[in-house]
Image (cartoon, rainbow, N blue to C red):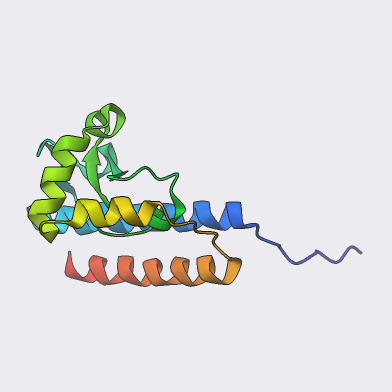
Amino acid sequence: MKIPKPEHKSVKKLKKEVWDIFSKYIRMRDCLRTRGVLTDGNCISCGALRPINNCDAGHFISRWYGSTLFDERNVHLQCKRCNNMGETLKYRRAIIGLYGEGIDVELEDKATETKQFTIPELEELKETYKEKVKELLKEG
């Protein structure tokens, strides 16, 4: 009888798992923030009302920059059209309205920092966002 090997997760696989739960959290958070419900919300860029399942968790600074990948101020509910079109000017104006003058520059500066995620760090992020999703489900 073969004894199964313990599953070894790579940074890449864990990063995707964190992204999946983080993305869900962001979309839920913004549905509650913009509409007060968990079913639909307004796009950060164009304001269009969309069902949560037809929205993305879109980044102001591209997700390829590790230092801002999971920064909640950098990621918001975004309709698929705006996310694909890269509506950065509208996105910039919206986050300045949410967080104040200078947030755009702060995130741009943060994006220049090199970030290498570790497995323990990603596991902690995954648990954190699982808990945050549970809390939003209670609110919604």
